[in-house]
Length: 382
Image (cartoon, rainbow, N blue to C red; front, side):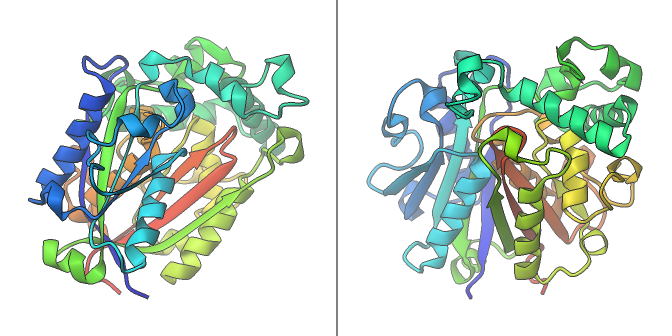
């Protein structure tokens, strides 16, 4: 099978309330990605966007973003999911042989809509939605409590993940300023305002405004554009039950399934030894621990013992992860951009040494119901 490479990317710096309109955000992301590798709009053959009608407040919302998103007179379509799923769709388009350059962008302006209220619409319409008690925060609290009780994990252990990611964010020039806490401590995380017990405000990846763009090309075309494309060597995806009561919240079966699929495609036998960095979309601090177990980096319940600092045995989210900026419809795509930066050695102050292979994930749904995982490798490496 022909390979697909990431040849260009760009992220607009996130903000809690951006001083520009959504079309300006989108245009800046797309123009930035094209300029990143010296390409023009005429070079693009297909455009895939990641937006959501609920977030945009209108039906078929992508019809208003065609021009700003580079889709004018192009083969254009939309994915109403996290941006990582749109990248997968773009990858499949590139593999058909009909598209030499696929531009994928995602983003939203959470300052313009009540994000947590909108997540109520993704709950079970018969048993959960009428009660209006389940949203992303309360579901995350159920998940954290279940994980803590089942594996005897303390809130302090989980707070350490938030400490690490918020400290990492201070070295990321594209991190949300409000996410950066260079002097973060476990006590500070635990004493922050409670969103839904036991989740505190600093354990949560707050939604923000932003946009990002990735440019994909099949192997032959990718090598014409640059000598060092980042190859997508594996991808896997899976979705769990719709109703929260039918799921085991102490683990992520969908991430396990996605990882098995991606590792098989990429030929990864020992994930911990063969992975240099992981960029995972963690909506909450405890999800990073659950994901590290699902990805095979450690045994179930041992996520707290894994050394995930930038200089640790397996760095996870050196960028700060979603806690450095959670832009709905773009967060998973940004994890892929951060992964590509690590491979290219362009991650600046949060760069990990000698990076060859990175895994990056995206998610949607309450308690990470649906997960997608990419295995990315340095150009030329088999």
